[in-house]
Amino acid sequence: GSLEPGWADEVRALARRRDAVLLAHNYQLPEIQDVADHTGDSLALSRIAAESDASTIVFCGVHFMAETAKILSPDKTVLIPDAAAGCSLADSITVDQLRDWKAEHPGAVVVSYVNTTAAVKSETDICCTSSNAVEVVASIPAEKEVLFLPDQFLGAHVRRVLGRENMHVWAGECHVHAGINGATLTAKAQANPDAELFVHPECGCATSALYLAGTGAVPADRVKILSTGGMLDAARSSKAKSVLVATEVGMLHQLRRAAPEIDFRAVNDRASCRYMKMITPEKLLRALREGRDEVHVDPELAARGRAAVQRMIEIGQ
Ligand code: 13P
Ligand code: SF4
Image (cartoon, rainbow, N blue to C red; front, side):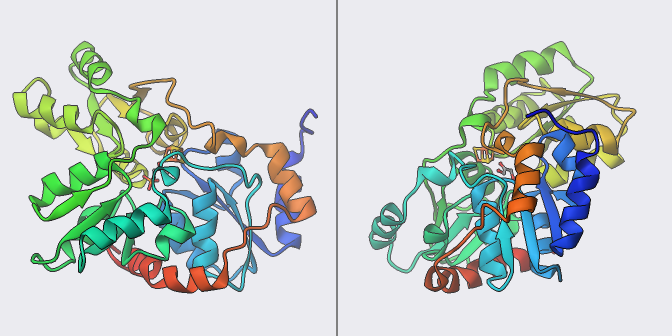
């Protein structure tokens, strides 16, 4: 149905009544970001979820994010406005595939991106997000083999930054970021020679961004590989007049709020995550009125994944 004008006030009143904190990822619809108590990247939101004393967490994001909150806080009620909000990246490796891969590399340390299922986390040594992936891998003794999964572009970025040879990378990808490719980025960068480039490391173009910088086609100090939270910090301190943004388009909303004087433009304005956009004001209201969809994680799986997620929120503080 159509939305009542006072819907945001109703959301806040219902949240208070349920003793709920509302968290929204930077890729959510602008109106969801604006009604939330906290908006942030996946690492910041995991930390807030772990520290919050609210008895209910309403996670406006995708399913693995809500699952991660539940793993960290098994005694809290965790709600997601639509449990069907999945993630193509999390779907790119199953727990059976991970077990087979581990069997091929006995003794290797498993680093999983937070974009994974609870089952995959239960077979993981340390989780990471795009904001602390480099620090997480750097914390592993140099002689240890590393299995990094599931994102090939983030993995390639970490391997390049650390120059680490004994790191194997799974060939997964996020369909939204993989579609932001090098050709588009090169054309946009050349058409806007003064713009800075903010590039999420999940992008298919992350390699091209560094190539451009390396050839001098774009000055190296104009190219920044950043998580969504890192983009906001960079925007606040940037002196640029315009910035080209290579990530999911929801990010533009927080960037424009953080630095209204900068002209932010998407490298690919069709880079929209249909899963993130499944969380609508109507479904958020329904979640708060009806207490759904509640997120459950098998307690045994959660117990096995908890240490890996806890190490993630501790590294890179
Ligand atoms: P970050 O917010 O950690 O940069 O994550 C990006 C992402 O694709 C989450 O789905
Ligand atoms: Fe998953 Fe990609 Fe959507 Fe993020 S943008 S939730 S990685 S499908």
